[in-house]
Length: 175
View 1 (cartoon, one colour):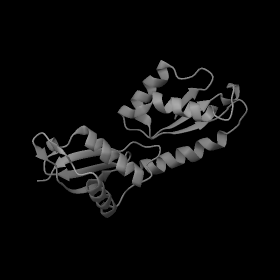
View 2 (cartoon, rainbow, N blue to C red; view 1 turned 90 degrees about the horizontal axis):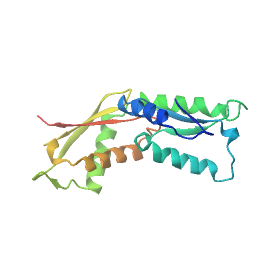
View 3 (cartoon, rainbow, N blue to C red; view 1 turned 120 degrees about the vertical axis):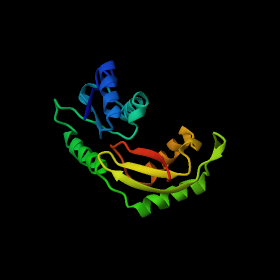
């Protein structure tokens, strides 16, 4: 859990802790506490969620919940979010599904020429969970620009629910 003070807003210490969460690939739920003390209208929650997502771009997969520990309001939203994030953190994806997703993603957006070559993906497989870690075998990983890896990462997230958890993509040369 990353707990933010809704009244005080996001402080440097919050960013520091969030950095560790991302660095160590941990599942996370962002909790905005003291929501009772915030002056609100019908758009306040959306605005705050947007601000949290902007400040913690590297935790864009995290669910944001709003609570008031003092008033005991919305507390019931925390544990379902934690359980969902943990279930996704330990999730396993069948190799056949993963390969279908990879082939569809490459078909929709073929790899561009990069470093004087064109990447050709062979197959992908999940090698670990906590966090979900995938190896994608390719003719030459040097032919793939980081933006294409980000594209594959986004395609995987759009197709499979990984809310609350980071995912790792490893490119490996097919032997």
